[in-house]
Structures are given as C-alpha cells and as structure tokens.
Length: 268
Image (cartoon, rainbow, N blue to C red; front, side, top):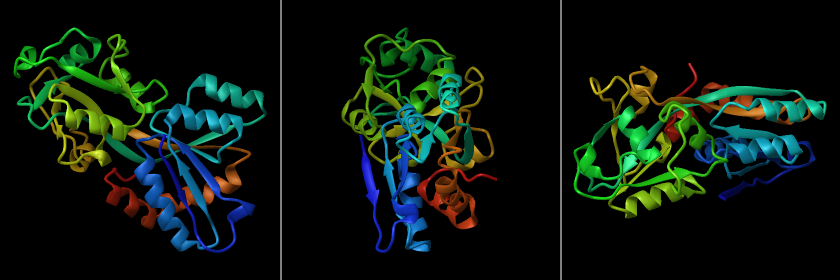
C-alpha cells in the first residue's frame, strides 16, 4: 500500500488532518491536489493513502476516512451498510481517466481489439503469435480484486467474464508498471497518468478492428478512445463538513488545472 502524508505548518483543520483513502489510480491526483490545496489554505492538513477503491470505501463505511477516492461507482451493498449506520453517501465526479493497455516496449504488437483483450485476460489466447506477435507466452497482469480498476476492466473490456485462473494480481498500479516493464511477454492495464517510456501503450478497437485509437487526454475528451471512466470522491453526512472544502477546491479552476497537469481529463 502506498502512503503519502502531506503536512503543513500551522493549525490542523477541524482539529486533525483530513483523511483521503482509496483508489491507487487516483493517488497522483489526490497527492498533487493536497499539496496545492494546503498552499492555498496553510492552516489545513491532508493525508492521502492508497490501497484500492474498495479499501477506501470500506474505510468510509468504518468511519476511518473523511473521503474515499474511487475509480468505480459505490456498490449497493456499500451504501446499504452506510444506511444501517444512519449515514447517507454522496459521490462527486472530479475527473475522468482513460485506462491504457500496456505491454513491454519490445513487443511488436501495437493494437488489439476488445475481443482479443477479452481472450487474453480470460485465458483463451495464450501466445502473442495468436494476435500477430512473436512466438512468446502471454503473461497477463491485473490489479487485485479490491481495485476499482480491476472491476472496471472486467466490466468494460471482459464484458463481466472472469479473469483467467491464476492471473498475476498486483497490489498497486506501480507494481503493474514495474512488472510489465521487466517482462517481455507481459500485458497489463493502468490509468493514463501512470504512462511512461518504460512501457508501451496499445491502440484499442471496440468495433471489431475497423478503428484503433491510442489512449490520450485528447482521445478521451473527444470520446474516440473507448475505455474511459469517471473518477469519484465519496463522503457521508458525517464527513461532509470536512470533505466539501477539498472537493470544491478540486472542482475549481485551480483544482482542474491540477487534474490536467497530473494527466487526467478535466470535468467539463
């Protein structure tokens, strides 16, 4: 689990640092936004912790965080548990993200259809030569089940089919990046903000191979890239007073500038 505590001089806001926890995808955004927020409001402190969307929402239910950062929508069972505690929950979309499919830079394959991705991650396609690549075993990497990215990929790309048994499950996005960058036959998926030169992102087709589009801020904005999702902050009636100022800041022009700088897509 990744942890960042962003500290500042001065008094703590509401007698303690505001806590944000959850989505690993959203860590770069929350970290940078917290730093910018506390420059604007020097008397306030924010702590940001990863662990996955499910972990963040569970912490919100348990009352151990003020804000849950999530790359998926909250589930019915999670809202039910909050209602049983007399709490209601509010979700706010603060950005959008294009989910990039990544491979080792040496991989000759540069495009895949949704159907091919489904075959790879469900275990039906096992060798890169089956999709126009080298005679090399495919090594798929996924996020762990508590990850909103894991669930979104399963829903959007696999059309809710199960991942192949024994798939390599990584505890954090950084671990996916590292594993794919070091494994010639690897394939994985990460949020747009994590892309770097150590991996290669693929063009993806959702129309059976007629049009392939690369992930980018521009293609996500114009909706030509097909694997795009909303990023959320969730708070409860109990945490609203502490949570809303940070959310309002992130939705402001300055906050959305941070969204863009980190590599996500702003809320229009």
